[in-house]
Every structure is written in C-alpha cells, then in structure tokens.
Length: 120
Length: 195
Image 1 (cartoon, one colour):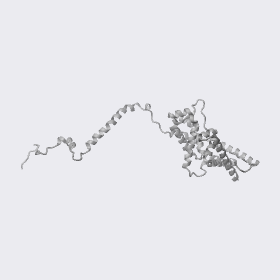
Image 2: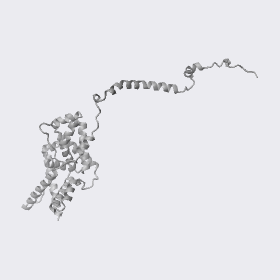
Image 3: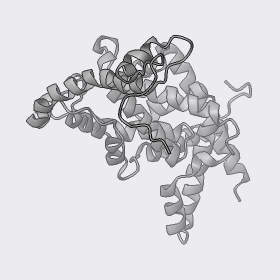
C-alpha cells in the first residue's frame, strides 16, 4: 500500500482508476483466436498409421511372398558374392575344386592327339 | 470466449479419453471449447498473434500426444490446458529475452479500432488507454500477469488459478492486488502525460 495519507481526492481518483481498469480489462476479456487456427492445428497433427483391418486385403496376400523373398535374399547374395570373390593366398584347394575338370596334367606330354604333327 | 459443453455433449474428461484413443473428432471438439482461452492467455502474456498461434498449436499437439497421461483427479482439463500454455509462454519468453518493448500490443483488432475510429477522438483516446494497459500488463512480473489473466480476463476462481499456477489461493489474491496496483499506477501515469 502507498504510504501517502488518503484524502477524499485520492480516494475518488483511486475509485475512478479502479472503475476504468475494470472496464478496460472487460474489453480485453473478449478474445477470439486467429480465424482458421483450429483447422491449421488439426491438419498439423501427426498422421496415424492405417490399422491393419483397414488395409486392402491383397497386401496381406502378398505378405508371405515378401517374407519368403526377404528370407532368401541373404542366401542369394552370399552365392553371388562367393562366386565372384577370387581365391587368395596359397590355398588353391577352393580354386582347384571349382576348376577340377579343367586341370591339365602337366606331367603328360600335353599331346591330346587332337593335332597331328606336320613335318615340313 | 469458449463454450461449455451442452448437456447432450460429452464432457472434457470423456473427450480426453477419446483423444487418448486417437479420436480426431473428439480432439476437434475439445479444441473448439478451449482454443480461444489458450490463445488469449498467450496473447495477454506478451506473445504477438503469430507467436500465440504457435503456442496454441504446441499446446494442443501436446494434448494429442499426451492425452493418456491426463489424470482427472488432479484438476480439470481446462486447468491442465492452461498450465501447459503458461509453461509454453514462460519458455518462449526465456527464449526471446531480447523482445522489443511494445510488441505485446501488436494486436490487429486494436489497430483496426484505432484506425477506423480516428475521427472519434474519445474512441481513439480509449484505444490508447487500452494500449497503455496492455503494455503495462505485458510488463508485469510473470506471476502477477498470469494471476491477472486467469482471474480478471478469463474469470477463473482464485482456487482454479492457484491450481493452474501451482500455488495457494492466498498467493493468488496477493498477486492480484499487486498487479492491480501496478496497472492503476501505469494508467494514472499515462493520464498525467496525456494532454
């Protein structure tokens, strides 16, 4: 509270300010949010995932196939990678096993009898 | 201002349960009841209208995301909403410490009133008084301002305001008394400088 002693004048002024303050506050009490704000807020809500019972049925028919493909994918990838990786190091057994049929016995003369030696 | 539910409509608590189940219609209904009040709190707390829009959007987004955590035993939905709004405005004020003076009265309605009625001097004078009051409200300490908005502008009881601000009714009464004294002082100063 103010320390100044109250006089009839200050009382009247105080009452007048009280009235004015109440009037102005009553005006400020009327308030409307920005038009369209509610629509904007509703549109900004995160989209909810579609429940499974509202999805088209063909998606569920496809799902076992998708699962099978997904399961086989690593195997197929492994085979493809394995075939393309060259042998490294001294161990040629892996390479030999793949090329076994094509190994030529170097101890033989090499003459497979396919060509006749022609003497000039 | 916001409307209370009609007898045939679900109350706020029922709407909150529905919103927790991601019911968008219930969300729209609840927002229709409380958006004006939430927006008003933000504007009168010193936000311009664009910032108040953001505060209101953030507030209702939290409602959508956290409706399941609302406990009716701890207070009304309105109390919960305004508590969220108050926290958001405090956070925003902290982030915008460099807010220029007078931005709190950036109110298109007031501008329209001032411009459209320029010929009527008394209306213009009243608009200026209203502007001065809004500036004075914006300068009040946060707790005084919140108590004033809740009780004097939005018509909450002191007990409701105490619940929103997590304090006592006595403290609210004291805050209101101090706020009114500050505002009357601002108005009398303004009157003294107005020719």
